[in-house]
Length: 309
Image 1 (cartoon, rainbow, N blue to C red):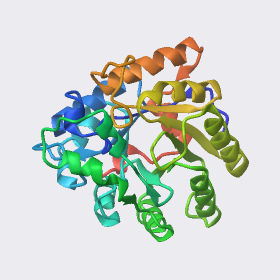
Image 2 (cartoon, rainbow, N blue to C red; image 1 turned 135 degrees about the vertical axis):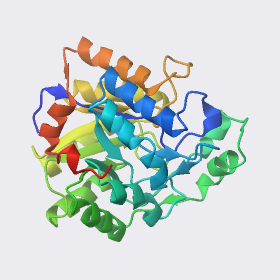
Image 3 (cartoon, one colour; image 1 turned 30 degrees about the vertical axis):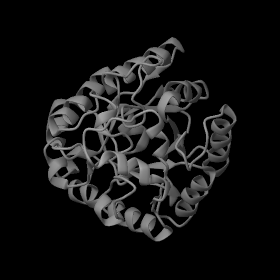
């Protein structure tokens, strides 16, 4: 799909990092809401949302936690609300899907496969933890998988698709693109597809520029003009990967879910800081930033009033 404006998605908290890794990682509903609103003001058209237990920062898919920040985000900014169906690798599919089923958002993220999802290497950098769940969560990730079987994916597509919700289709490797094409061919995904290619997670594709090009070439071949391409680079690769995407005509995702870093060796103080940083690069490339209204038109999203907030 040819488009002139670049979509910035911002993921403000996520399930990869733990609270002890950064004092800036949003944890409470108020912090998550403010992070999303600030990211929107900085230029993010889409906010990708997880929840955490406000007492200990553990990832949670409890709809009641989402209920404490979604209405505020919707009332204070126009950003497109994108709720995760990923949750965390230690959750069941049923747990992960609950917020999307309750609130029927404009967009739901959907991982295109079962995969190893290794976070244990973070223990090489982070060693002091405030909460007793954090270290085992990371350490045991060498034995965990993120599960999304073909049956799981079909279930999510059918249940969320019935409400008019569309999908941020997260592809961590080339095979995931073929899985998306499979479900497109079966009529369970319809264009324009919003393909989010993910680089740098242990268990998925790497961060070499050839990896980025291969994912784009494959998506171009499979989906032609009927898709919107975006990238997500994990950790310190966030901004370089996003810049590559922009130079190739793609869209970008940033935020503290994907990377805790701002300037080299310095923690980012907010997701909005990362949005501002990538926006300055995009504008230096003479690229225009897409507004939420632009993205609703590009992705053919349902009206936000159909959400159940």
